[in-house]
Image (cartoon, rainbow, N blue to C red; front, top):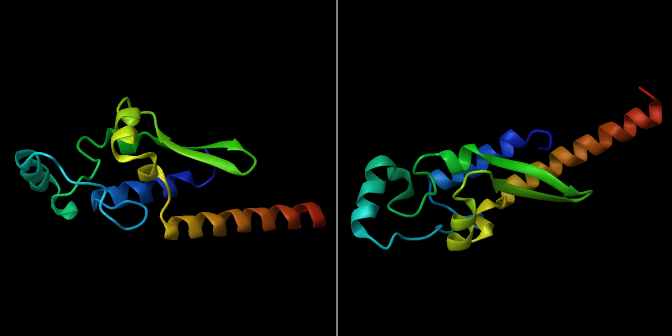
Length: 122
């Protein structure tokens, strides 16, 4: 996992609680009115939309891993990951614009800090 990745995955989990995708739209709708009513009874913040948080296991097992120098992947080690990613799209595991900006700021700060340390041999 990369540095400060807990903040990143917490942002995704919070977004899911409100049933929002990375672009601010809804993740999706339930096919069953009965299941929708059940989900609203346990999480009304998503207003009856898909929230990806029934047990919380999918979100609790989110990880941010570096694939290469400038590529990262956010995924869940939960057994439902592949099925949910196929049904609702891998985009549900992406960062929203605010999270992207925060990550860019963190990476810029880290790179600047490393440059200063290497330049001044701190």
